[in-house]
Length: 162
Image (cartoon, rainbow, N blue to C red):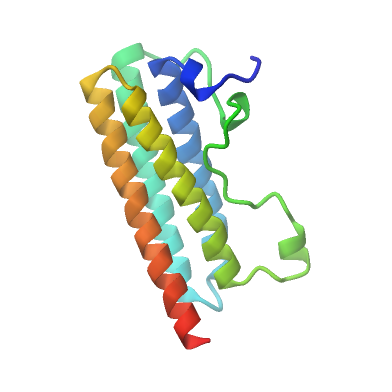
């Protein structure tokens, strides 16, 4: 499928995209959790909890999709949309190879992604013509905002201790 603008997506496609985003971020956050488990166990635990939340959001979105549209016959992923939706930058393996991935860098990467996720859900809320989907996307935007608040607090704590 050629890349589309977010504004061109149907409600079905927005739900498929949201499912992909949540699934991908659960995997990415678990990777960060595993990366920091030995030297920042509190952060690793919180990354794991955030991954669990992403998984739960994905299940909620999948159930909503199935109830409204049946079994998914296709997928829509972040790669199918022109705008950047949400991506924790794990593709740059240099961070891991040269071991310059520290907690502050990880939090900054996740913060950027969570801001993008919140913006994605706010845009989906505005675009939704269905009240149920509008409410679902509004709730997910608030969850993402909670992640943003936690990360910003943690980054401030790191700055104060430096």
